[in-house]
Image (cartoon, rainbow, N blue to C red; front, side, top):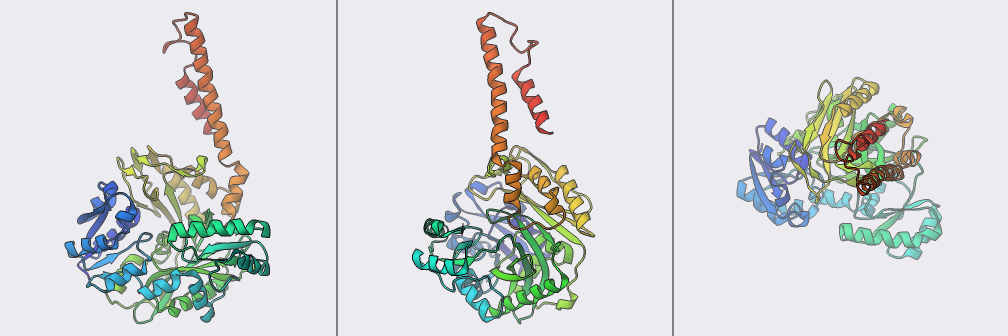
Length: 505
């Protein structure tokens, strides 16, 4: 086993990985940018190395600087977390050429699943069901349109080298296609350095269900059941839960078997996730494989009792799985809410700044994987995640009630958050009955009026303040010297306070 591991990441995932490493009696090394000098993951590590300025391209994405930090500190292995270099085959290959171990799959497996059209081809050969789509990337809009018309609209134009919704466009008709095609190519090029796109049939209102797998170097592969990730906005997950409320046991077992087949097709090792789209009839189709730890992995840990990070480290050190598929425990239900410093009433724009106070919830069945603390800064340069709030219950109802209780207990001041938005989602009838799909959040936002509602409220507040200022000005001109702080007229601050009280209802 390793004696020292460098964590090539930041925020909550770096802190979470370090916790497992410390339980394994492994020393930890953090890397940080100049913007993260006082970040929580730096404080939690045994050692820390600055790897560059705030821009991730000059720090967290610099392979040479990360490797140099590992060499300087004597780290024997590197855990990449998720994002940044976690699915970078060049990084894994560079480590293979040193005596430093990459805690993750082989470069060939990363490449096979990272390039989406190649992954589809491999999955087709392995007998994994696929959403209808073009087998190769297409660079000609006319050719791509012809393929789209064969499939029937709506379709998705997707970046061949991408993920996370980048370089992706839904197209509902032929007249929209050319502009969407070029826009997707531009975005794909900017996000991934690769403009290749392909066309895939758009399944109307599916669920997004993924299967967690673990595989060792001996070819032993198991799955750890599913996670429903359908609560999404612009293809970004917001809330995840396990088990999926509408999935039959028969389909669950089939999906698990197919996920294992997919992993075995690329000689996978470590922790990974196979993602599927599930239609209303219970048919499921391969979407992609993420060759890393997922943001939402804690809910799988909560129902199985299996520490995925410890297994990632153990497998990288040469350990074999001690569990057979029939031995994988499954107990209760779990949910995760991603807590962001963002403003849901203003198109979910990031709300960076100083977190003046943070009080995380606690109690039975509550876990909070946080990446910040009171007095810390949420930097403008990175993803504005504050924490991942997770609850467990003996059944879905208990997990849901615990999550609502925990969200109400959570206190974050200094920045705006999506805490109230999560409560709104959890109380929506579609979420309560589990019937929600990937279009649930857009429908909900349309129902509630979206950001326009916020703009109306802001306009009302501005009108209150402006009216009071006009009254003050008129009073001043009239020589009324009682219009100051001790005036019997309502001050702007009282008006603001009353307005805020009204907003609560």
